[in-house]
Amino acid sequence: MASSKPTSSSKPAYSYSTPPSVPPVDEILPDEPLLLMGAGPVPVQSRVAAANSLVINHLGDTMSQVVSQVKQLASYVFQTESPYVFGVSGPGSAAMEMAITNLVWPGRKVLSIKNGYFSSRFEEMASRVGGETTVLEAGENHYIEADAVEAILKTQDFDVLTIVQGETSNTVFNRQLPEIAALAKKYGVLCIVDAVCTLSTMELNMDEWGIDAVVTGGQKGLSSVPGVSLIAFSELAWDTIQKRDARMPHWCFDTRLAYEFWHNKGYHYTAPVSGLLALHEALRLICIETLPGRFERHLHCSQALQRGIEAMGLDLFVAQESRLNSVIGICLPQEIDGKELLSLMSSRYLVEISGSFGGHIVRIGQMGEQCRSHHLLRVLHALGMSLQSMGAKIDAPAGMAEMEKQLLITYP
Image 1: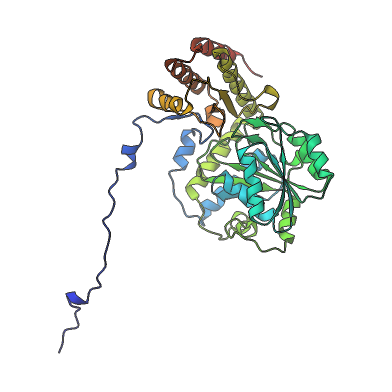
Image 2 (image 1 turned 180 degrees about the vertical axis):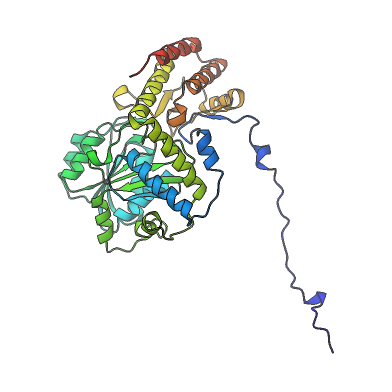
């Protein structure tokens, strides 16, 4: 009887390329962690980092409890009683896209208020899903005036208005957001707000201001890890989503599917459990600090840093009335190369700040854990000493002295 064992010649012949050989991550990272003082991501507290190291069942009872508490904690941070709060698997831009995808479809008219790079992203997202977009541009490095918004709202019927509270790219603060949200309500327009760098760093009251959708990312104001974001819809926005007849173009961003996981303990897709655990801890720490206390801390630290920068002999990029405190834009002397400055601060002082989106500036973040006096002292020292070593005519000691004086002032 013939043997039934396969012969060597019967084995399939596979051809494999040579596997790459790369060093482990711990050989890539610096020996001492860099202090992240740019426009995001930001440093996280140890409890947040520890939570991010865990992996649990995304459909188990523990995860269900975590999800329930994340919604409860986030509702406080959003200042909303709406039940339609969701986590988003992705960065703040994914939350932006979730808002647009659900509230904009072919034929919907969108008024997109543009202050810079990130606000223009709203317009691009809306046009990609078939929205008929109109852009209203603010003056250069200036907030949009509510009167200008009302003037265009009177000219035609819009369905949706998009706006950023803080334009991270050029550090402009849209300080008339409450008035603009009220105008949207007056003219029957849904108001979508990007609060990625501002939520929990400065006042935003979703229900009181009448905002219909607020989006934020974990890695900035909330001081959590990148990759998990939050979105909240008003009752009116949710009703609009429920009544839409247009086909939803994005499966992952369909809030009616996401509702099953976030509100019915059901399945949508495998949730980013580690990131959600980190977000839970970040939100819990915000609630312990309270929003009023957190707002005061951010304002006090940011203004102290701003005064120190000016005392050093540098100009701030945006005038006071339009200036965002969460991210500070600093004008560089013309002879200073921005990329060289960033490299020097990183290599010599182990401090990272951000470059620009076109202007001759650098940006320092003042969000969450960045707003601690020991971090402020380190970043201003690194900035001043690096500039002086590059030949800039600035007074680093004067800047440090002024900031320390401001930090010693007790805030309410």
